[in-house]
Image (cartoon, rainbow, N blue to C red; front, side, top):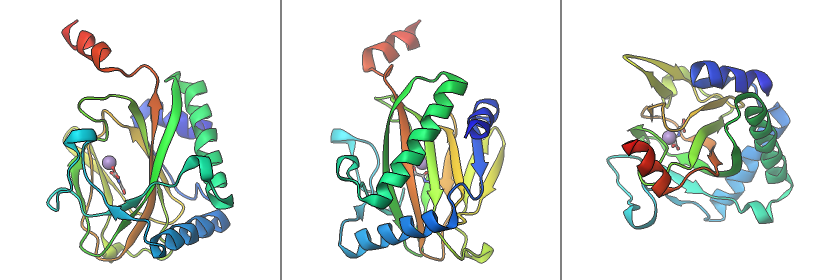
Length: 206
Ligand code: OGA
Ligand code: MN
């Protein structure tokens, strides 16, 4: 966990294969599948509040936000992992992260998510983004890579089961390349308490 936080601080991003042990990875995927079958997913949009929009040209995935207050046994393990990583990041990078929000995501074949940053324009609470992939037999020909941009260059990551990616939400532009196979993940964000509209405005002026 500390190595991930250190890399995040040095490079602004970190990729960690096999972050989830195979047994937990399998259980989390089964939990996602059960939620999907129960009809708990819905089309994802962009923006929040009144600017929330579902746009086919921007992203094509479905998401489900498990309720952290009503977690089942598998979700409890998932939240525990995210809490341990938050503690490691705070101890290493002093970002003052205090909360986590996350959802399961499902991209059908043909799905993608255009280049974007994760922090909302009118709310800079999201500090660190986290993605955990839940695909057991991913093939290079399935596409669906995560592309993270860095100046003129970019890094691609295949969504292999168990792989963790984290990056600075405000800084790292990224994109989900078109997938030709169903693609499953758990995606979340660590937030800082320091976020507030007025503070951001005064910083921008100063
Ligand atoms: C997102 C996102 C990346 C991925 O949901 O905001 O960028 O690889 N996901 O699924
Ligand atoms: Mn994103």
